[in-house]
Image (cartoon, rainbow over all chains, first blue to last red; front, side, top):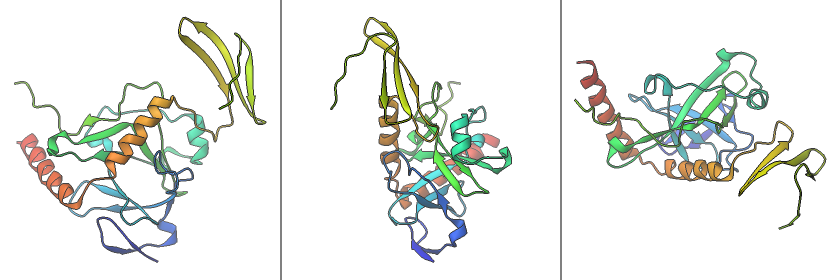
Length: 144
Length: 82
């Protein structure tokens, strides 16, 4: 089927490409079906809503930008996402693009966790964590 | 809104499988214990609201801003490796 997207024009997606977010995302509870569309020549991956063309979140893989980033998935999440093996899990974080661009932030407190094998996803809100909703993507200008 | 008064160690039952117990009261702080099925997510309200607000802000990016951000990232990365 063809879907209209925010960044990629009209895209043909297969049913098996669709990732199900059973509870939507916080603030977007009715958005339960998304596809992941890499944005060519960038490190960005778009989490595109299937039903709302104008809704696409900008994701990055966090570990190359925040090398020490880590968290533990609680058992409830592991169960909800039907995770059997760590290898099936893909982790992204959502970017909030700012102008000026060096103020762009990543939401490390609520990563998007996807069971790639089962095509189930969830924005996990980490509890008892030091991570926040806004971490600068570009490090503060180094005080040299 | 339903308003109930509870004492220390007393609980509230919501539906068949959600139980909220008052575990401790200290000054203006109340410690609650919550038993709920695993498919029910429980968050501190202000944390949940912050994530909602951040998602709303994040959804507003534009194609132009992404292209410019990408250029800036490339410059930063190449500066990084030199």
